[in-house]
Image 1 (cartoon, rainbow, N blue to C red):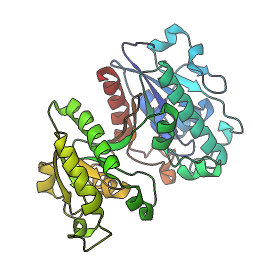
Image 2: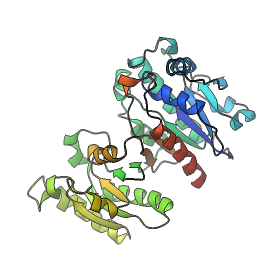
Image 3: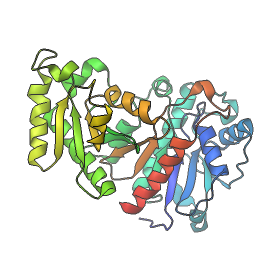
Image 4: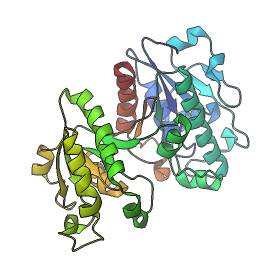
Length: 341
């Protein structure tokens, strides 16, 4: 295990045709780094092209990695300065990338960057990783079965239990289920999965707040089922027993709350974190209240991983219009977690 002071945060470039490369070069060109050392893993040609397109200078040293991205080949002196790590991926040519136009080769490339970053963190070459946005359709075109980062990271790290938590100063939401179709959510809910989400979220928020966090747990159905009138008794059979079990473990919770009123201002004033049953239940209020100000953190991994709270924004890629706020916060949060973990 490599112990760095300041810690190295490895940033994946994300989908080459999206805003990820633009955010990387903007971030690296406008910052003076004191508390951490950023490395970006991706394609050097794409990063140079994105820098030219948005009019920034990004002349950091480039280190070409072998296929697979073994960071053990880097020299000791490299650990003290920002770097661009060029990772070749079979079938991908960075000079052929057109902003806004992904394909199976770009999907395979972004997948390779995440794999290499995860292996580097597991090996202790970096203290944390921060992932740029991917295009899930590009992964599908490349024949990659994982629906997103969270599922891939859980598999690669052999994590028993993970949780996707998106957090900002305004609102924090943890998701019991993540990238699944709405019709599949009810079958995936269990007392164990809800309690696990609460426990992971409580540990993360306690570390930040210095006290036991207060949670609001959302119901699944309209009006939280209204005593069994809507849905198939998910609140009574699953969510209520999970809340009761979590309370016995010492957690402070209210719910299950009707989702349409759970995020009103007076509720938010009483809540440190929301436990949401499915993806959009949590992300719609979070992105409404804190878009570009939230960070995605994967809880339960043996490594530190954060990400932006937005997607690839193909329609504005490489135009200089992408907001850097969430990206900057995600990298900074990764460095903070690396030091505190």
